[in-house]
Amino acid sequence: MSTPEPPRGLEILPEGGADFAGVQESVIERQPSPVPPRLIALLVLLLALAAAAAIVAWLRGGDPETDEAATAATTTTSPPATTTTVAPERPPRTTLPPPTALDGPVGGLPPVRPDAEMIATLAGDPTGDVRGFLFRLDLLSGAATYVPLPGLPHTLIDLDGAIAVGIGRDVMRVEPETGVTVVIAEDNQDVLPAYSPPGIVAVVRSTEHLFARVVGPDGVFRSAVQLPNEARVHGALGDHVVVSMAGRVMAVDGRNQALQLGAGRVLAVGDSHVVRLQCEAYGCQITDTSFSASVGADRRDEWCQDICAEAAGQFGDRDQAERTEECEAICEGYPIVTGTISERIIELPAELAAAPPERWSEQGLMSPDGNRVAIRLLHGNSTPTGVVVVDLDEGWGRHSPEIGVDLGNMAWAPDSRFLLYTLENDVMVWDVEAGPGQLPSGRARVGEPLEHIILRAIP
Image (cartoon, rainbow, N blue to C red):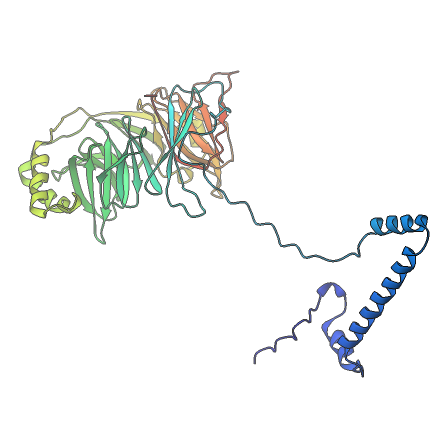
């Protein structure tokens, strides 16, 4: 049964103190007036107006002092108190400035900072503008600019000075000076960086398999592999795609050959390096494997046709036969580089061993020189506890100055000395080589919700 609507104009105020039953009972027992209430109210109002007019006329007929007193009384009398309902204030709308230079440089920069340019992704105006931006900050001068993008970026990769962003399912190379974009890979689900030489790994998944292809900054196809869908892709070195599957870590090339790197979990992939964590009954250790590209016999005459049959649909809107022919020509002409393989074992420093591996971030970040890895840690309740940097060459570990706060995305400076990470709407600059008595970190007060960040040498 539906509840009947209350009579219009009747409002039951909960602060009155009486319950609804009492209010209803008093309304029922009240006898109706023989004269309509509206007529009574009108008569009272007319009588009040007539009395007020008579008083004013009498005052005007008196002496001037009486008039002045009446005037003063009239001007100082407060109006009757009334109750006014004010609508709650709406929160201010956040609007990004136009995509031009800022009004002024970023002044809040730490005294010790890298000689580099920081580039970060910035989401568009949440009030409806679907564009994104690149935020450029010269860490020496503080000069900052916005570079508009054609959509919201979800990936940011440094291609040895060139900048690539992922927007939707496309990867675009961006010219930071002009904002001009060029699509270098289409129809991707995951995008990861490739090293030695720089590029990207574009991953497409189906219900049973994944197809990972290595593409250079110019969009030129380098290599590709097809793997079971449960494989996890971590990046690429040369034409080898680094994956982990069933507890094993391997580097797979397009010739259907796999370089077995060992068991464990991938911590980071960098320039010529794959760093993994391997735990045995006696404990855990870090293994850094270095190699520079391809191994094994050249079997391109066997695999190029198969690879290009899979990759042909990823090369634009031209005729498929034309795409396949172009792919095979590029594939067969791609140089194969054979390099040596070396390994080094690093014992876990105390700063990293204090937290079990299940509380480490999924994958760390390797420094440009390949000697340091930054790993985020979590408390047992999944709250952040900071970042630990491990020096693979000297074996030491250091914890970030910020502990127990939500540190965002990280980026290494080109000199591998400074590590930057987002904190709230600002950026922390950590000098990982700071000695005793030296200030280890400072805060660059940007005031923008930055997301992915990279650092590169100032052009």
